[in-house]
Length: 143
Image (cartoon, rainbow, N blue to C red; front, side):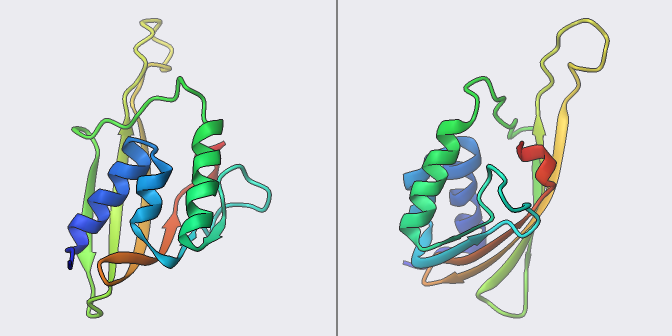
């Protein structure tokens, strides 16, 4: 079954960012798929490079398990993306602005403001699955 770039992207985001389901996330990748976050420094908590669906599954499960339970989920109504197809039908690029709701502490110190994280992802697909994903975001936001 062939999936459109939008279907692939939305499935990936739902499995990872929205539900933090490492099994569902990994199933979006080919068996030999590669996930890369090239801007991550060596030794960062977030994985810099994962090769193969099973390594993606286990590393992301461990990462999601280490995340604080109180982490705010993104607000899909405030978040947005623009998907760009390319001349290569197996490659698409997504510009993303993810908005996390402010906590609204009521103290007027700015801590209650929404936080927007902007990133770019480059997808290479094969047979409706992600063969390679390069995720470009600010590493400091993942600490």
